[in-house]
Length: 434
Ligand code: NDP
Image (tube, rainbow, N blue to C red; front, top):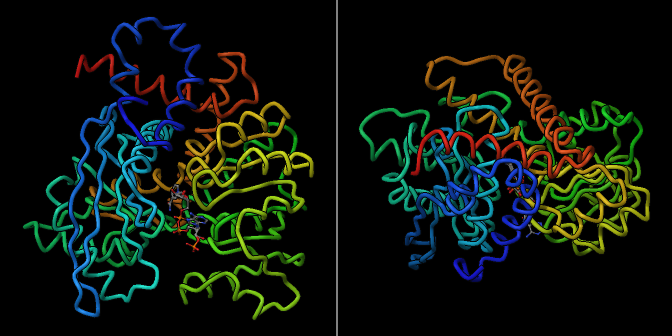
């Protein structure tokens, strides 16, 4: 805490992992002797930079850009870019730190990193967003590359922003380095299934977890927070398994539709129009809009899928969910539950699919995009989707085996932390003191 003052989210993420790995450190004293924890918790490199740009009124604006290159033991740094006014170093570090273990769990050769900016793309014109992305990349380009660091999207960074950043990178660099960014458009090197991957992957993971405890999705009442990329495709997949999504949200409020949320309407409002979720009731007057996003967890449900942002479910919300008979929580967003909420769920026997494992489908498919770019080839939707399903099954199996090895059956939060940490720590030992 003293070494990283004011970085509350980073402290929170570290605390969770430290707590989980205590038995590993006890079992393998060599990790402590080699100061693996101290090394792993310090980023290899962190970059902060000025991003000047000119808005449509001709006024000069200044934002701050970040890239934290946390750990390259297993492969090039890999992790998304977040554009949101709340972004500061503590957020980028928590995300980059979690990314190390998540990427290790995928079994693919990728290290961990994350970046972003306090720029708010909401309410900006396409041209403003383009100028911003070009200015951002004019600095970032010198720190990244297909074998160095490969950014992708996150909150506020979708195909549009990736396209503008890729265009600027290509213009600066002499050569076509397709694998420098993932989440690209399909017309210039993107992978099929990347758009759907995090949401679909979450459902594949939760499905495995439910099956291991004798449950499935059919006829379950499901509440999903958020209505962005992860939330939309989690909804799409869970519905095919018979789940009924009755509520979704955005940062202003939530809609409840007891007939089941109409996903085409959500896609129209959020993807085509970049609008607000409150507009849902204009299309479905029988549904209800509630101002404020937090009370969504008061709704009675069997399965909660927080897919918006960090610290969405606090202890009070966890208590409400448990009182209403919630059976499982699948973390689509990064760190959507506070540590107190997770501890409470586990105490009460609620199954928790932890973000590091459950939302790894996005980055795994990004790694498949990198593989296709290297081969100068592309796989079909079915090929990528089947690889994604296998990866998510394997991540579940890995977390479950770690639970069994350490006698913490059912605690997939600790199981995932232990498995990810052990993999990276072992590789760091092999690579010497670096
Ligand atoms: P999007 O920008 O597509 O959507 C984010 C959604 O969350 C929107 O509905 C947004 O509402 C809501 N939201 C964002 N910030 C807040 C906030 N402070 N309070 C309440 N609601 C908020 O992002 P993604 O769907 O890509 O990302 C969602 C989460 O999933 C993040 O935690 C991200 O790190 C994580 N994730 C994403 C991956 C990906 O592949 N995209 C991969 C792995 C994890 P509004 O529209 O009002 O802003």
